[in-house]
Length: 212
Image (tube, rainbow, N blue to C red; front, side, top):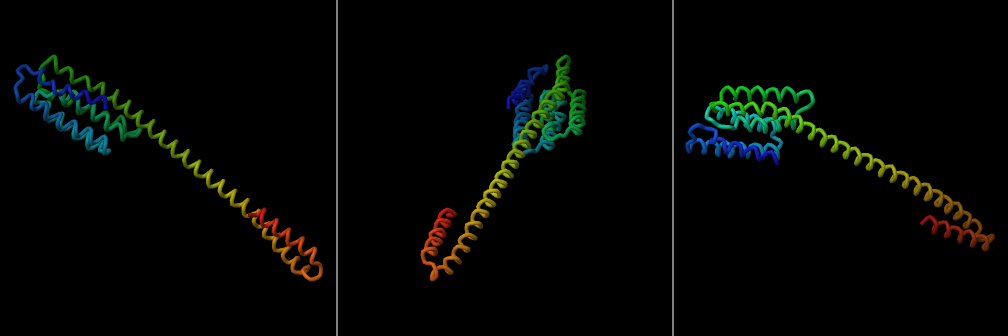
């Protein structure tokens, strides 16, 4: 949000006019009133390319009217186009913004030597655009790494649950098998050897408690 301060340069633009009138100040206020919300909404809503197009059209349309928008708005447009660029499209998009800015340089009615300030965005377009691109790329890599870490943690949780399930299944299976076998033995010994049957019944209870 710090670069929003560059919009102040548009507001003081009439100072560079030889004979600034009220219409010059109203034009500066109007440009900021349109450009600032356009830039902020584009950031918040992801309208990078449409927002950049509106800013560049606004800068070019007001260049012949002594507006200094052509000095500030291309920088914001470069920041927007860089946000959604890939390594392959970044240079092309910044080159387009640069070409439009140079067009505004020739369209501008700002008197010399003040018109030379229009060349400042030509450098800032590439500086700001590259910086924004690298920041966004770094954030994307961080998001991808975080997502991958979450996926690994999820898979590890699933694997641990499956291991516990296998262990519980094995323990329960062995216990139930022992209970069935000893239960059958109790039935056979119930009449012929009551004492042994009692011991086996106690063993069945002990196995069941251990399993539980």
